[in-house]
Length: 542
Image (cartoon, rainbow, N blue to C red; front, side, top):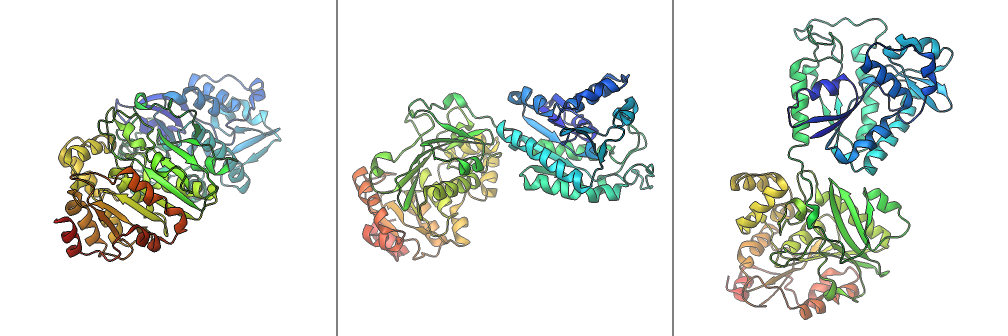
């Protein structure tokens, strides 16, 4: 895994414990987030050469503020970005004109003290330093987002060592910040990184010990091997088996030009919603088709399994049966399908790296606001019906219209859920796949709804489908045969067959007129508002 380090010896020494699967692509050290992107290179003429090529290079690069350039130059190759804040400890020097230099011992010994004499210094932990650092970090995070690397970034938070590994107190020089004081100063810095959405890996305090035989010497930020092993394990777990989408499967030619967004905030800020949107998250393209009809109700449609259809993502189904019915329309293609070359069904659950339920909740909420609509309806058949249940649950007052849905993935055909778990969740066997799906918080909609629901569900089910007994009834039992979950059940042919398109179109045409009164819509559709086990048996024989 190609790794970019923006930090100190903490990240660099940890890297040595990561193993052969990790490759160091670029290392930006001895550079504050404040000096990054500012150019104080004019000071070089006042400095003496440094014997160490590494130290010379670090001073030159810091004065050049080369972090943004270094990151962009290798962005396409990078799998992991490691960050730590140890090199902020010296503070910065304001060289004038919005240019800054990091206060480094190497810079100081090369004549930096004399070169910056009379210039303002901002010590680490001061309010001025923190304010400038926030601005610098915000620029860095914005660049990570623009390069689609934010989700691949991990910050290492390591308490300063105040003791040797045997417990004896580590005496620090008078000029150095005491470890306890440093840890307190860092609190708001890490708090800001967390608020920016960066993932943080914290070293337990009992591992914050320094060995006497560390190759760089004992220091508050030189740690015992057990500390580096802990950090390395955390890094490997955070980026375990990263999935790259099989983009060769994706074919957008049929639809036209998609507008790319790297985060939901960019969609919020756009002046006019594009019809075709690609939101990049976790390295995957989430493709959406948006139709703004100025309506009060928005219909969100999810597709079923691709099967042998020959369709290539993005897939936007349900357009014909919902055309011209007086609602806004959003069609969502499942990006999880790109986890393998031939995956046909993934239930819109995403991957280990992509919490698709969370992302879709945020993006659909944003789209609903941008559309100025009041009511939300989620529609899908089979695997898309599962998605409609899952996402509607996230929106109180919304309506789910699942048609012949799966409600618990593990009660569907093993060939499908094992393929999904292997491709999306990194499992390697049926047993592993089963355990992963049992542990997944959204793979069982019975559990999700049993805990309570504030949305409304009109459950549409073919009475001649085996899903009646192994998917629908267990879900209805889990929700206590709730009046908030009426059932529309008819015989539409033997097997897992949906209602005919004409029937579905007639159903969906009534949605706009309901104006959010879903119980009334259920009555119009002829759904049973008080379903029971006996009623199901009488209608289906199951």
